[in-house]
Image 1 (cartoon, rainbow, N blue to C red):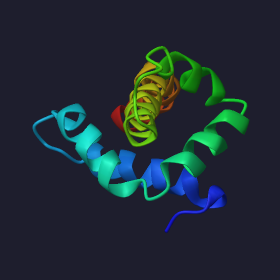
Image 2 (tube, rainbow, N blue to C red):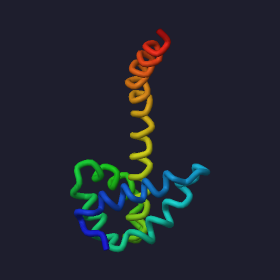
Image 3 (tube, rainbow, N blue to C red):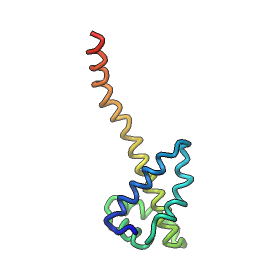
Image 4 (cartoon, helix red, strand yellow):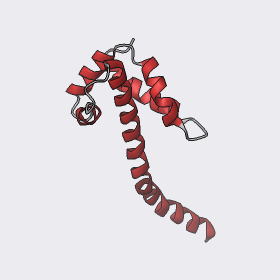
Length: 112
């Protein structure tokens, strides 16, 4: 279903779907969802191995050589989703700080 060019689309669609969980327990669902959605685990792992950003994450996941490719692919997907989530959370204070001066200026302008 997903070719090499659309793995980033798969990652982002899973991330968007899981982030919409209102209870915040998306990580509990991520593994099972990744197992179902990754149709070709070997192709996914090969793509990640060649990707400069995700190859390091793959290396971290491959510490247990006894896992089946489907399990490695699912664990890799969860690790990717966690990294994306961490990156978004770490940039949020910067975005808030960048927006705050303009919001403050607008509030000051309206107060005058």
